[in-house]
Amino acid sequence: METTMTETTPTTLPYRLERTVAIQASPETVFRFFTDSARWASWWGAGSTIDARPGGRFLIRYPGGVEALGEVLEISAPERLVLSYGYAAGTPVPPGGSRVSIRLTKDGARTVLHLTHELADAAARDEHIQGWRYQLSLFGNLVADEVFAGAAALVDAWFRGWSEEQAEARQHAFATITTPDVRFSDRFSLILGLDELVAHIGGYQRVMPGIRLERRGDIRQCQGTVLAEWIAVGRQGEERMNGTNVFLLAPTGRIESVTGFITLPRTAQT
Image 1 (cartoon, rainbow, N blue to C red):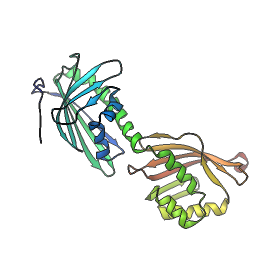
Image 2 (image 1 turned 90 degrees about the vertical axis):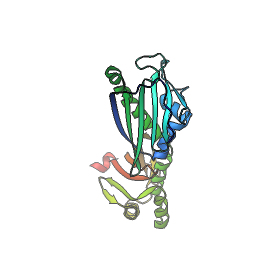
Image 3 (image 1 turned 30 degrees about the vertical axis):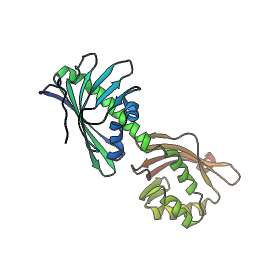
């Protein structure tokens, strides 16, 4: 592996902080945010850039005008990135005065990101603890926003599937948007697996013929968890009930579980 060291990087960096976060995406997807300047700037700030090769330079422009900079010391996609790290102003860390190592490991369909920041000074280390906690949280959400950019369409397809009367067509519709072991639960359902879901919806249609489900308002998504409000509409367009669904999306972009919270009309509750 080719490695280039900056002349100002201290050989001894006795103080370190470590952070570990799990991200709902593949290592290849996560690593793109370290090698593409547009994605790099999306989590650091407008004008931030990176030349992702050994010896390449990076620039971070924080809101407020503070600039951090450094050099790529090691890179091995999609597993490892090591950077020298310091500030243009020289404080709290001079240029090349610390080292940041990022390691990605695959955990099923997720990626676990391990970050180590080695510094020469304990006070400087402590200044960066909350900063990295915030920055990696922002990073994880930006990756998830890209992975789950189609979440609204996925939710709409789920609701449309509940109106599909033909079992074969319903099976196909849900097979394209869910995992095979999809789970669904609400006050009247405790379903495991695609086949059971398809049969369960058939029973629902026999009890409530002509009912269709529609999303109401925008979805809310965070790290692959989606909240969607919905209404159930009868044959004459009347609202029969409403509720909220919590969708858990797999890093593959499919639905792996749905939990429904139903509000029945007042007349149906009495």
